[in-house]
Length: 342
Image 1 (cartoon, rainbow, N blue to C red):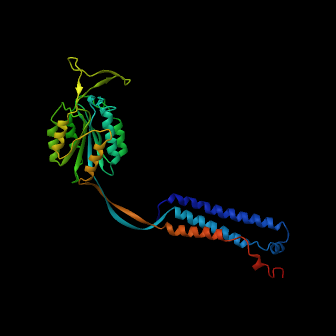
Image 2: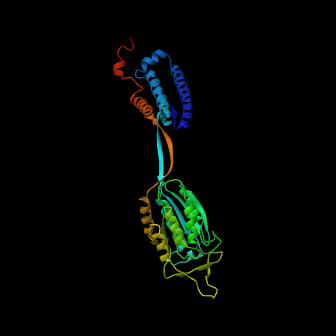
Image 3: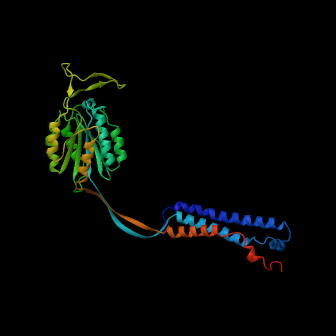
């Protein structure tokens, strides 16, 4: 036998104290009774008083408390063992943190919108693994694959455009790193959610997507921004905008959403391209698609379940309390008076 809440057993130390209290109380009551006169005469005069019943009621209270404490400790005996399997989808988020994500053609800006979409996705997950790859001119594994969603949120909060010093948009490198970051075991479907404005300046993102497709990895790009484009604001250390980004000739650099590239990436992996919306409908649709995919088995372990037996003790506890409350300390005078003074 074992106790699930064994710390409650320490409360059993109160039972001896309670017994001492009642013993002391009854002793004091007897001494006070003696002071009024002859004990036998007083017993005849106090015709309804029953010291025996008072002791029985005290005993019922002590027993009720004892069984209540034992029930709270949750005694368990008898066990069964079962194998618990943990399954889910592995999701790697590739998040663009280049300076072009500061463009404000979607409010408040592209990066904040992208991070909020990731938070919404994390909130929907139930036992799935997720990791984060941050990229700009280079790619970096910000958060390894995990089911600790609180840690994922902390890593996500720490991302900004200064996370990676090399500027640019290396989508291809990000997809390659995300592909390598999945756990090798498991036969389920794996997914990359790519959040970017799609302007790749460093490599061949479609070729990287095709390599991912060969490993049965689907890519769901979410385009952040507009096709008309927006200047990239340059900010001071205090957060205020000082100017906009310009090229070598002094012309304002316009950052535009490259939907064509993102659509090609999605098509090459049997995924689906979505444009970011304020209501985040794209996140719901991606999650619904992910939920239908084949799941991987993350771990399998034996779990022992013990049979709860506290119910019996609780019933006894309640019976003691009920009996104590129903029992009177006094005797019915109609039944006790006859022949009392004979």
